[in-house]
Length: 54
Image (cartoon, rainbow, N blue to C red; front, side, top):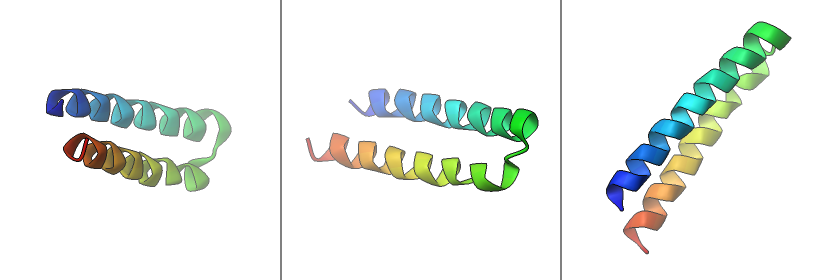
């Protein structure tokens, strides 16, 4: 189960980075797009919590 969370975590961080760069370069939304990293961190922490207490 822990390996699944690590794989999903890597996928989430990768998608977050790509989304951030797309929003920044194509739409010039650098400033508001940083919140994606906060949201990704919260989602990953939640997944880790659920995997430990499931």
